[in-house]
Amino acid sequence: MKTSDSIVIKAEHLIKSFGTFRAVDDLSLTIYRGEVFGFLGPNGAGKTTSIQMLCGLLRPDSGQIQMRSTHPSIGLCPQNIVVWDNMTCIEQLVFMGEMYGLSNKKAKQKGMELIDVLGLTLKSNSLAKTLSGGMQRRLNIALALVHDPEILVLDEPQAGLDPQSRLLVREYITSIKSKITIILTTHDMEEAEKLSDRICIIDRGKTLISGTLDEVKKSIGEGDIFEVEIDGNVNQILLPFLNTTLKNIKMIDESSISFFAEDTRSTILEIMSVVHTKNIILKNFKMRSTSLEDVFINLTGRKLRE
Image 1: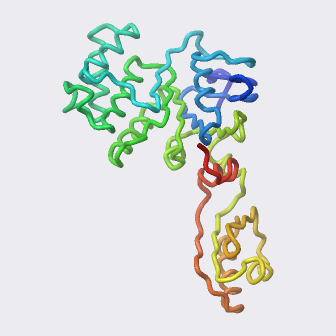
Image 2 (image 1 turned 90 degrees about the vertical axis):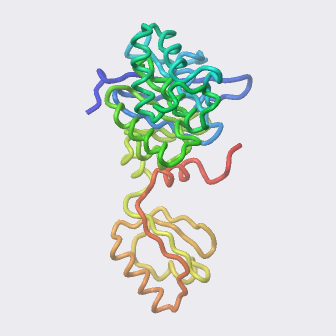
């Protein structure tokens, strides 16, 4: 159960504009100790500006940010890889640790621990410029963690990683999340769903929804999602003959439809019965559970953002 004592960051009514453009528009959110907070939104939604304000890198025009600690230690792993080309992995981690006040011995000890757990052991004494992009990404994550921060901000941490590296990073994030508060921004809805304890989706600087994974999924309907494609106009030759209550009906195109249904078995039987008795040609029939991507698309739309 979340209590006021476990709040790490509480932001209220944040507003930030750049000239006439309002990047963040009355944003409020609460982040708790020991959770992965999935902070999601399309390109240009205001995520980066919001993160900069939460980390103290940017002052809001108005609104308040309250932190559990007066000066919490924060680790930031940016979307763009930032490493020193002509320093070895361990040199970089020791350097970063010392910048945060660690002794040389402690920084080296923590650095080697992170190198091992993130699969860089054989590259510990290799220059960063000789590493693959995926290895540099893992080194970037290690650099954000070497000082044992209270809050870790991961901006697209798995971008450019191969499947094995993605699994390794995911398992490591899961293993440390009870000891640290993690703010995760990503466009990969599958990864966000696997990692996040709570989700916040924003767009145009405003909060669209915030809550646990189950809470945000239920916001667009309960039950399973069906997708049906027939040969013909679905509004004319299929829907009028269904007695089952369908929820959140969306037309994909003239012959395709998606909807929610709580009684999966009865819905399947009725659709197949109507298809059979009306001699409808069924081209595609899918059923699946609600995903975070469904919520994201439902709230932010299908249109691509630059």
